[in-house]
Each structure stands twice: as C-alpha cells, then as structure tokens.
Image (tube, rainbow, N blue to C red; front, side, top):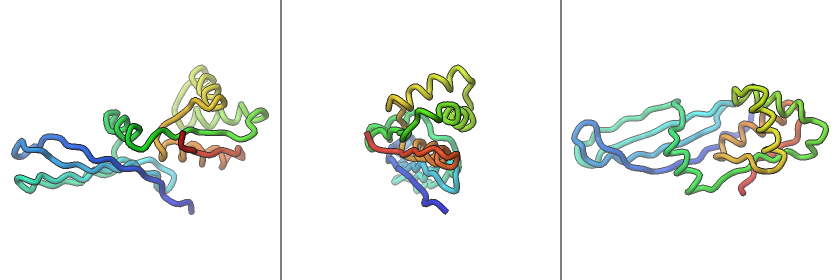
Length: 139
C-alpha cells in the first residue's frame, strides 16, 4: 500500500456562533487512492469547534496551498510512445472530454501541468498503474 501524501494550510474565517475569528487548519490528502479535504476549526472566543472531513478543496485554499508550498509538476518519463495511454488516464481521472485531454497531454509533456502535491501524486500513481513512468516533482 502506498503512503498517504498531504499538504496543509492555516486560515481564518468568521465564527458562525459569535462572529469572532475562527482559526482553521485544512489538509488536502491523498489516502487510499482518493483525494480528500479535511478542516478543523476552533473559535478562541466562544470555544465553537468543528471538524469537516472528506470534502472538496475550495479554490481559495488551493491557491493558498500553492502559494505556501509551491507548485508540483506532473512529469512523464519517456512519453513518446504512450500519448494515447496518458490521455486515457487523464480523461478518466479529470473527467475531461477528448479535446481537453489532448490539450492536457501537451501540457504534461511540456512540463507545464502543475497543481498541489496530492493532486499531482494521484495522477502520477494512476499513470504508473497503467505502465507509464511518471513522477510528481516540485517546480
């Protein structure tokens, strides 16, 4: 079994109980072949606390994560003979149509397809499972 991969960010929002600052810690994780977004929040004023597990990564926190941890590139080793297989994996994993998948393959092969560490590691693992040598690496 492959090891979990995760990155986290801290951010603040407004407490739904008292309106004070709510401290949040969010974690995007790749666990058992799936991406998940978990958040723990605590209000220092009223004590309100909540944990939300298994959601989708909000775009604002994704951008914060990329800014704090840096972008990770999906790199395919020796891709010339496997373009169709790469496209198939990307279509399945990202839910894209054929036209978008072709554009994504070009971005992957040029080293221009980046995201968070868990996102790119998920794709790299799926590609490796299909016999395509791929790695997720910091830019």
